[in-house]
Image (cartoon, rainbow, N blue to C red):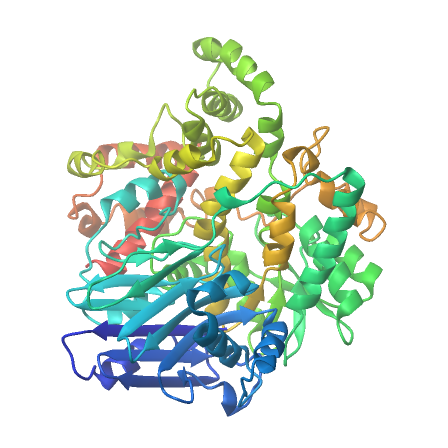
Length: 622
């Protein structure tokens, strides 16, 4: 895994080497093993390397073809590169080393953009074509690896992280109000806009070709083009079992040891089962327990799985300590306000492992591909729940207000929406329609965001996916928005901050091509989520895991905000300097804080978002 960056300025005969070195240096944490830059006329490319495949200098980047026409910087892993290499060798290509980078470069030279449909892996890469004076950027189909870019007057700047673009000094640090509006509802921007005006995220499954005349993203893969598969339950079960095992086997490809983050859930347990079978040695697994009050402890379940498969199991017990330092550090890792507090345990786990392991498999993506969330079960019986909502909503004013009733009526409001796009969006946000999160913003900011629609991405996807049933539609939407913008963003930034490569076998191209095409009834049935995956794993993964309840990291940030972090939160949000920004309605903000501290309302989700935003704005826009 690596960090990539670059700049193309067609007004320059030779781009500045000092500039690309500075941009590359800020990505050093992503690739501490090697670093390289090159300047080719108006283009400058930079790369930091975490050596995983071919540890020799033959894998050094930027890497050029022997004729010097193409030069690549690449971040990722291609799990089918041995097959591609053999195919290229049969056509006469001679390789200098064993890296997947060289295979990708030669494959791009032979097939051009058509190579993208052949790749099974996670990747973001850039190729400069000296003859055509063009830059080609591409990102994997699910957005496992990040790639940001900013058009400039006569070219483009790009990088694995926004901080590399900012280092170039050609991106204005101005707030994007469309992204802010989305952030207030979801705790993240939904892409392709970022919180920086003018900085965009290349969408998953897209490529972008820049020439002196500009360029626009082009989709090479999309969920809306998945052709459904008709398979019996028996055939689907065998297909999932085979595809899952093959996916994990491919993800073990490495020249350094590989471990597994074992949470005790179905996905990580299944990965452990298959990895233990195919790994060439005793597999190491890592589980974590935290001293957080009111947290979830999955160590016993993880230990059961580790003992069952005979892994070299490591339990890391991490004390929360000073959360302030971790919270502030994570703002710098993400370069944007990011309100999923699950990044905290993952960051601490990788910090504890730093130097002891480079490559770890993790179960992200399994819920969005196999249907692991409660909302999929709800949508499977959508008609029943909509009828229930129509009966319950008129009773809102007759029932006492408390956390339980607030949660129930928030759900009924969501499921009752006539517009399927709003139904999907409201099922995902934890904000209430009665008390919109934008109420804490100043009138000027509210006027600015009023020109934007926080539900626009959901409306656009709904329009393209309306032919699908509600469960399948929600799965595809989650794979397009929630997965890349929240979960994969969390994984990449929290782990790469410590030079740890996390691989996600559940998003293997061959596996997902098969599973996503299966019917929704084979994913959700009889009130059971992940129906086909559980069926495929029965007899392989212990029943206690397959039949257990879904848990996950319990990060009690709402509790912290009225206990150990209460004074810190107030010192940030009520700081006169923050008030001078004119961003917040100070009366509503103070009321929100007081209600949370007094226990009258749980405003922890909104306050956590505001805290992350204030820390980000102070660091990046001041």
